[in-house]
Amino acid sequence: MHTPRKSIPGSWQAGPPVWPRHQVGWLIAFMFATSVTFIALRVVTPSDGTQVLSRPGAWTADGVIIHTKPGQTLRDRDLVTAIDGVALGSAGRNWHVRAYQPGDRLTYQVVRGGDTQKVTVTLRRADTGRLRQAWGTILFVVVLFGVVAYLYARRAGPATTALLVLGSGLLSSTVAVEIGVSAVDTRGGPLLWLYLLSTYGVYVTSFGGLAAFVLLFPRPWPPLSWDRRLLPVVYAIPPALLVAWALAALDASSATRWIGRVVAGELSIVMAVLGLAVVLAVARYLTETDLVARQQLKWLVGGGVLSATLALVVWFLPVLVTGEDLLPLESVGFGGLPLLAGLTVAVTRYRLFELERVISRTVSYALLTVLLGGGYAGVVLGLGQLLGRERPGLAVAVATLAVAAAFQPARRRIQDGVDRRFNRRRHDAARTIQAFASRLRQQIDLDTLTGELLAVVDQTMQPTRVSLWLRPTPSAESPQRSGGISSHPT
Image (tube, one colour):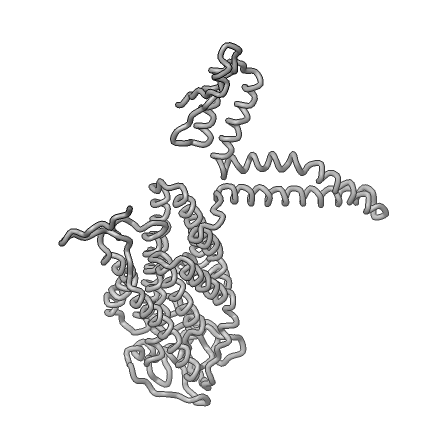
């Protein structure tokens, strides 16, 4: 009978780290409310048809560098320094700004091609068409939120709660940043500050969920179980760093330059948290002893490393170094698909097969397809040149037979080569078993075979203990012992 354990007065029993659900709910509600409020205010506020991109280089000490469509009064990459005589570098500090209406005409001071000139701009109704252009990124964050919501509904707990915070923050901040602000909005006022809060503040806060998830999955990091107050601290570290960075940058010569420093700080914090999360996941995998947990971490680390590499190479590093990305922002979100796939497999533990076999099979069949496809095309083109256009069917038939004959030998050779690189354990096990099978045909000594068999099993399967039982040979003198069993453990 199970007897409940009594708690000792004054003692504290370690348990899984938890964060009250109502606090998590308030945090997620705040993220979405901030984004929705900004979007609603953006829709009713007139625009000049430009957008200030979410990049450090777009916010300078003199003003903002804009992005716009061809055929507009303002041109792409114009530097807007003043609007109606008010310098943008000092306008951002104002909370109350003049309200404009669609149709109002404003005088912009811009730097274009090194020359300073004044341009008259007519305000219009806000255009949210940017969301259609950024469909790839929006689709990714929507899918991400759907996946983490499904995982939370299926396996509610601290780890999936952290994922829900991450997914909610990425969805709300991404939609806000894709809508963006125009040059006229950088004068200051509630719209500008809501934009900064709903993009950079919420975005960095969501990465607190990523840091918490790495420390909680697949089992909580021991210090989190010793003191449950550490979990909220993990969530709070990224936004606290951003606030400290923003306060330290207050001595900037202009408001737009200060915003540019905040944007640079946000990118640095996100990259640091992302890199630290990958390092911690790898370290936890190397120190994990449970086989199932190791497979879960392997899937998570594999998807995360691939997605992080794509994001760093395609967007983060080029933006920080040159101010330009290698691919359009619309396609950046697709770099996170490997992480979503690995995350889903790891958390649900559904068909948790070995990642090395998936990689080796994918690489081997991709190489096989390329080689055989190239060989097929080469044979068809070569025979077509020799036989001429009058007998194309013969060239196709010969190429098909050649590819069919080469399929199995090529597959075996390619698979063996790929296994040596990506699935070394299986490759070594297969070679060991093959060598033992060859010796088995020539060896007749029972004791020698027993020792070699146990050695092969121990080397290929690596069990904690291995034993071999042999049924004794029945004899005429002792028929009653014909069913006995002898044991040879190692």
